[in-house]
Length: 292
Length: 308
Image (cartoon, rainbow over all chains, first blue to last red; front, side):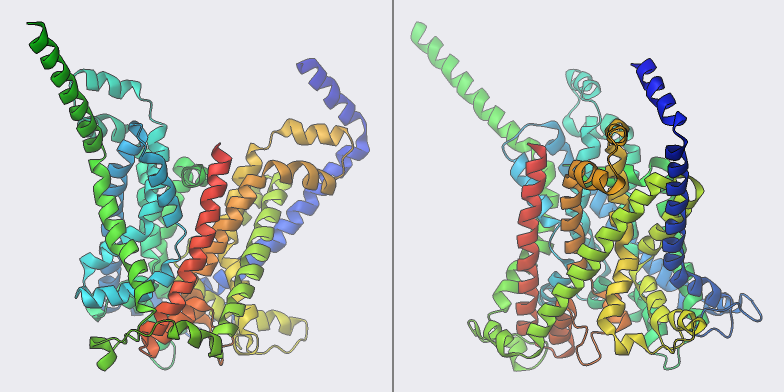
């Protein structure tokens, strides 16, 4: 088999036009990729350059007197810290509620055979496809009637629910890959299902849990529409909504400060994504989300 | 003697099967929190949406306290409303051009190019594409707004070639939000297709190379049929994501000028929150939810088909 392969490779190498063609293809592919990458990076370049330009406008240009004045201007408790703390409470709260509910739900779905499993999982999958923006109008109505408007906990529970179907689906897939044998031994020793879940299954799927947590956290951190509708007081607004006021309500837009604030607000999710992508590969995270 | 014995035996067995059934039920207990959350925050709003779409419930005034039952009036109004049909059309254009055509084709193209190039270029371009996807949506929207505005980067580039630009956000609002959504969302398709292409056995494409299959034929007759499951799933998911886009459009054009970029989520928001007509707003939202349900049902069928 390997000698056949080697013979084929030799045959391929002997015909130089093929090798030359390969190189040409490679160069063309690199050139095409570079052009695409340039198109994608241009809007981001403005963000970076404007943030260090005290006289920034909408044009992309090298700052004449680069400084961190924009960053210094937004580094105040009212402008930056309070919104970021609110963002953190909302996102971490959402991720914790989400993960707790998802792990509990995934355990019986992954470990016990039941007639209930399949219909439930398909209903969950169906739930992932409901457009959240469409649900916002009725949710607002519901929150008004239940007097939950401007409540952080209620907003957290709602945001957790919107990502819950995807989280259950991912968590169940990660849990399926933890072998049953270890648990069976613990069951023999009389440990209950939930005890084995906590002591054996969860430690073994740490990485998967991390992926789900970060996945939910990033989505909640970037969510603008939900807090925009459900939270009213300024003191509860997360950064996604407060940055919008930079843009809309101050009359003349402070472009540089807007860019600086945007960067400071984006850094946490960029870091978290890098952690997931480095640790396990985004393809791994996607496979948890996509595989049936 | 024998009779009580068999009796007790039977009752023990019956009790144990009842206990077994009970235990099997109890095992499902941990699913309850999720069901409660989904029931309260997802099913109830959807049900309430369908219900209120038949009423004139409003944000304030008499109709807020005492909504009237209107029957199908809100839905009939959609047909005579000048904005709704336009909004449906703009939503179809937005989804078809930016997701199905733009994100899907570009994502596949980038993934294919990456298999041909490899190395530093591929990983650098991958990082840039993913960065615009992982950024918070409102930040991406600002960046896109700046790019397309009168003094923005696009006009600077055109200026280099001596072309006089315009304010694209006002002159071509749909084109700008379509392009912005392609820029923002292509990473998802790219990641899906990279994962799918990495599963295509090298032997298959190399064997085709031996047969002298040209690149395009190889792509059309070998590679694409192998990853058709991923293509279907990807199309489904990006359609649903694009259908729900609000923030990007809201920041860039706010649906304007003169409703020229008012897709259905923006229209539902305007009717419900700007004009205070929750009844009509939920009717539009209900239509969107129904569209989502149709796509969701197809998606579930796809996944079931792939499994069996």
